[in-house]
Length: 113
Length: 114
Image (cartoon, rainbow over all chains, first blue to last red; front, side):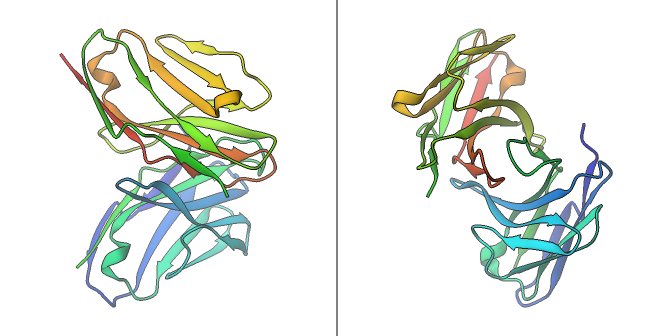
């Protein structure tokens, strides 16, 4: 199994509060991704990183920011959480950009009340 | 724009029955990769297969088989002689050859009853 951990695994927060989710990998892979999973939508890409301090937006990036100060850590921040951001968040990693399968972390279940 | 459609939201079968999951995709890219992932009740996502659009040969891995038909833009997945442990949500996904953005279908929940 790919060495990917996410923290916290579960979080309940209130609307308007900031939230930061952490993804940590031990594989030294260059590429890291944040997805959200919602019923009927599968997984949708929020942001991804192609190296330290190099990030780009995905399909559903509004309301989210990311940072990557070390190869092994990729942080996802909700500056002011809203109920529409209640979801399961998955981190993924891949060794290469092209033609490469992504391996997923265990997920973080976030509830915004 | 890319799109992946899994029209079956839920399938229920009795153990030992075969089950086929449909996946239809849309893309303007001439080359691409197709994937299947499994999400068991424990919630993690497990990679099952990656298929290059150049390769239309069917693939078999144990009780799993995949049928790729470029002419109909479909990449269907069959579980033969299903088992209770096959109960999970299965996702089909698409990635352009040049690039790393996965587009997922909505998933199909498979329930295998003993």
